[in-house]
Image 1 (cartoon, rainbow, N blue to C red):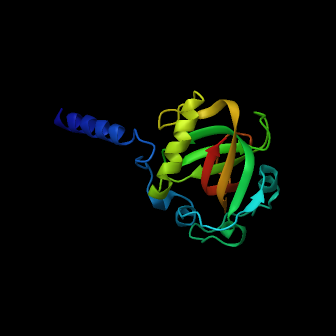
Image 2: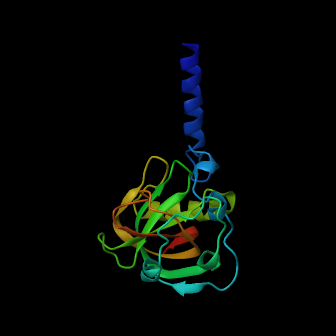
Length: 189
């Protein structure tokens, strides 16, 4: 009974801690996250390359995943900006606490999508809170318990770094590439 009480108390503490969009506790260790160190970096300053979702969908994909310790190379080092895309899906991944989003070129639920992620890292807290607040204004709740497809796609802009992931069930069936923008700051227009 004492163990059950301690377990219940600790679960309650974890639930309370995880209520904020910026203070999520990852279920998985960093080592379980593919190329964790390459994804969890600051967004550099500078003039970004202007692209769109279709550009990302056209990038060639490696047939074999990169080694888990592979640092960023090539395209992954170039700051990119998508001036207009449509946010189709948003949720908080409990494994690593990143906000996982899916964007499309057009506001069509069946359009091909690209994954965009805003890390849990402290430098992204303001961006995470802004996104959560803007989604709430549109009647969509984003937290550890709520997320998924938005009722209507929302126009957004995205600033961040490309990242080549690998295919491992990273989203909906509309996700059409292993390329992501991660880290990213997403702003609802």
